[in-house]
Length: 148
Image (tube, rainbow, N blue to C red; front, side):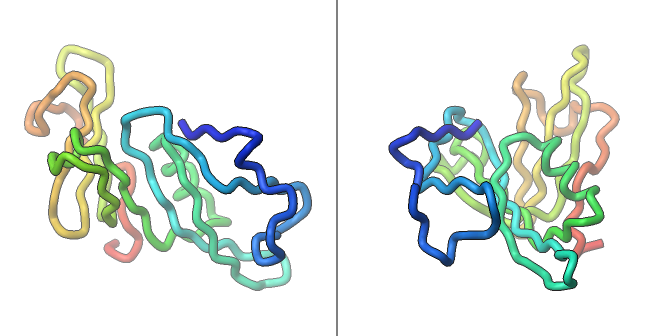
């Protein structure tokens, strides 16, 4: 989950940041979990037919799936931002996603995720340390539309 505070709030954002009535702008956010999150670049078509490019950060895969299923949004690219214990490089990394798979942990009713990156790397995200080959009922939950 992301967190911010009143000190980071921009009371007078530059005009280039203003995108509508009622928006709030922050100079920074903090990630409170040592867990992967997603940087999602997407387009949205306005009522006048113009296309606006946006970026959204989400920490929950369900939010990514919901955004991908919403016909008002066209996802251009999803980036996985992963901590070192997920990517095994020992540092935070941001990499383009090709596909995300979900599977059931053996003996438990918990989901684990496999992130398939554009470079072919695969990262497992299992709270129980399960290996990819041990997961049951593995299914894709997100596929990069450029690769469909």
